[in-house]
Structures are given as structure tokens and as C-alpha cells.
Length: 108
Length: 113
Image (cartoon, rainbow over all chains, first blue to last red; front, top):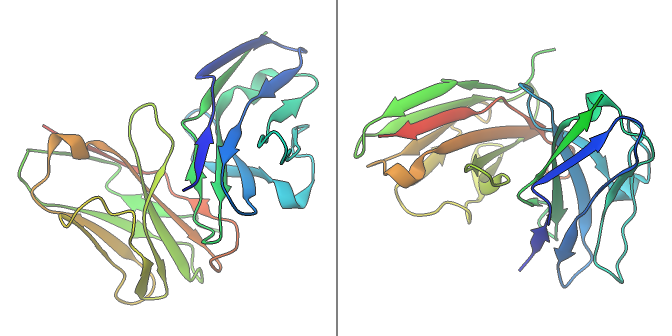
């Protein structure tokens, strides 16, 4: 069975502060990890996937197999980063299992 | 170009009624997925189609739920004898192929009174 845990329902920071959205997973095989984002009144969209190893909108995420984590980080938060963030895991089937999401609020 | 569209955007029904939710995927996308998102939770997989056939329906909660994609494009999720617990946002997504990025629709908010 595969499972994704996002321990924080809400993360509140000030503009310019560093951000780390936590994600831990449970999967016996070799996982593929994703971060999805949903801005207010917009649809869910892919932010980044670990195999791409790229930075999107200043966000990065590193897969740590030892700690089974895939935390999302940004060194300086912007107000436009305020959104709902979902971590997701795909096993062999490529059907993602989503975490419950973390609401990020960036205050001016 | 047009993204994934879903109709209706909102549906209110009474317990025991039958509902149909429609999804129009991005043109040319062969894979289509249905998810259910309950309040305070992430999307939960229901079923996915590759072409016209349901390649994986393991997420459907029970036999009241059924989905079709007869021509390999538009899909309809059908829920019989609705229950209050079926209230959720139903999301549809499509991708070029199974292993490609999924593009989500805006969802249909179903409320069962």
C-alpha cells in the first residue's frame, strides 16, 4: 500500500521568509513523487515532479529515500505563493495517491 | 486551447436519486481519470480510462458508481441511489498517455441532501 502524509493543514509565513512544506511517504517500491498546487478559484495543476529535478516558481523538492520525505522548499516566499499544496506519490501504476494538502498563506 | 471541462459545476440532489457527471477531456488525450475530493482531503482516485476501456476501476467505492467513455473522448460518471456520503467535489483529469502529466478540470461539486 502507498500512503502520503502531509502533517501540516496550514502553514502561515510572512513575505520573504523561507517556506518548507512537509511530505512523508510510505511505499515499498521505487516511488515517483509530485507536488500539485491549487490557487484560489483555479484548478489543480502539477507544480513539479522529482524525476525532473527542476525548480518551478522558485520551489524545489528533493526526494530523500532514507527519510522517505519529499519536502517542498522555497527560500523567499511571495504573496502569490498562497495556495493549497498537495504532495502525491505514484507507484508502479502511475495513478497518484494524494496527501490531504497543506494550505500556505503568505502574509504581506 | 481548451482545457478539461466538467459539467455541471454544481449539482444538488436528494438522497436516493441518480446523477450523471460529465467530463470533456483535452482533445487528443487518450487517458482520462476520475477522482473524488472530500472536504479537507486530497483527491482520491476512482477510475481511469485508456481509450474507451476502463483500465483500472479499483477506486470505485461500490457498485453504485459506474463510469463510461464510449467513444474514447467524453466520459460520464454515474452514481445510483445517491447517499449523503457521496457529497464531494468530483474531479476529472486527462493526459496524452498514461505516464504523462495530468491536466485537471474545475470539478463538479455534488451535494446530496
